[in-house]
Image 1 (tube, rainbow over the protein chains, first blue to last red):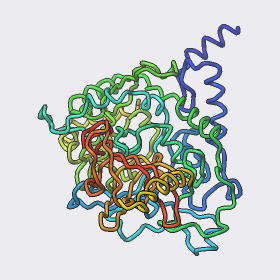
Image 2: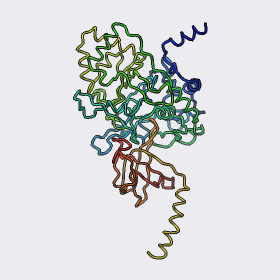
Image 3: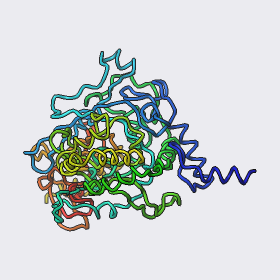
Length: 377
Length: 115
């Protein structure tokens, strides 16, 4: 009986929110403890704010489970000056950017009479950003830089009209996380999110953000810094890192035809079906194939989708969105403007325009099959 | 060199150096945002994830800018927006004051790039 239960458990397809298979007992324990941190609701008394977008990681990453997607949309802003030599992008970090929080604590409201952080007039664009699911992101983190750079073709030397470019963080390291691929590592993305999204300081980010570049008024930040310990950061990171990607569903005959159509119209040029992880201290992350459907590089998506710059990413350039788990999403593209996968494909411009044209030219059954395939991911 | 100046250099310099090392200090590794040679200021963008910050530094007159590998020594005026630098600095009444500056690459080409 026990053996039968164990066999059923082993054969069960991973569900959203499950940990990666093959974790050690210690890794599983850190995953479980990390979920508690991820789900923890902060209040002003224990560190929330004074500026914030959410009071818990799981407030946004909530659907269908912690680590999933959500319906929150936040504001990012930057100033793009292509005429400037050296660096054309100003992320407005000196004025509180690029993440401008939409909520304030009662104490900050009482002190300044504001309900959110104002975007400064220097901004040349304001972007809406939806909540992506972060299932399987530990595997994306474990892909080596060289594996990503192997897909880069900034000068389009192969003449296919696709020229993936790497983004880089301010210290020069290759970026991969975020809609503009600015952030090099998952741990940094998680650590930074506590401060940028919840206003929670930690040993990694010990200072509160500013209010549009100005100092916090006295008495508006009652919790002692750091508001989250190193242990809390490590556990939250363990939870996110060890979340399994959604298991692709079995392909129906239609979905198999859709997979062929996906290849035929050229989607895999950017939505690379599988990346491979490199060496990693966690065995479950080591040398694994990840059905990520991304190259983690920047591509020009055309003027209609363009919004802010970030790092080396100009307004029209976005990282190829991973399609793993796309079936869990209800809104698509970086700002959620598409409500169906067909719309999302249709809105691809720039380097994606040719694939979108070919998609539109497919017979209706093939278009439906391609979408059916995407809904298995 | 006059005897008094000689004395100041050999007595005061180590004292000042020690004071600088004992003052609250920090370091930043990021991209040059703005260089103002006239005002002798340098702004560097860095951060953790999407939590970004800009540090504005005063750069003492004559402070050299080292290059990776100890090659040519540069000046503040040689720095350009997008250069990746490591700066150690201290907190003074006038704000943050740079102790050392090293140019280690270009943001658009990676940390090991030749500026």
